[in-house]
Amino acid sequence: MNDNRSVQRCLAILRSFRSGPGQSLTALSKAVDLPHSTVLRLLKTLQGEGYVRQEGTLWSLTPQLLEIGFAALANTGVNDLIQASLQALADRCSGAVNIGEKGKDEVIIIARATSETERRKILVVNLRVGNSMDSNSALYSALDLPEDQWSIALYPRRNVTTIGISLFSGPVRSLALGLSVNDDDYSREQIESELVHDLRAKRDEIRRLMNLGEV
Image 1 (cartoon, one colour):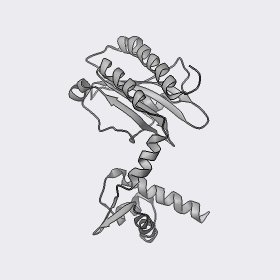
Image 2: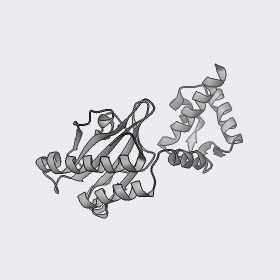
Image 3: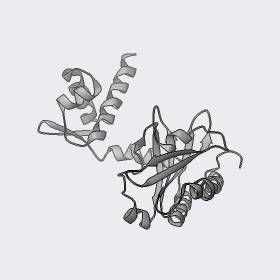
Image 4: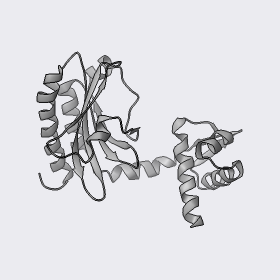
């Protein structure tokens, strides 16, 4: 039990670095709600394994964690063919396309493609593979939806609309496919007819490429 709790606490500390590098012991202790002595002991363990480093009074993650990250990416099932397929849709719609996998209370982006037009035109959110999105996002809402349903999220301040559909839902993992476009390019009617149709067609293609169940 103690070993399990230690692992959970180490993972919580690693996740707390999402707010950025150069975290103080006080900040980390507050983030994980643990005493300074406990966090310091776990940091020393992680430091010994090469996953964090100390610079003065601040702590940061090391590039060695990328080994775990790359191993995780290799297990997502996303290859060059799937990435090219996502890019084709992003370019055709002048938007951004994401594949997200269900996490604990969030959806984790495991593949992302953006068009050059999107990068110039849409106020780009700093999203990339490995980032998470909360339950208010269309990508999260699309997880486990029935085949004929889709989700939508409006971002009027950014002039962006996002739609999402379920890509795969199973006992081990659930995936969703999302598309974000600029509101100046598509009316709500076009989004609900043309883009939802395009997203469903892309879902069939990606399922074949990922070998996710029957299509």
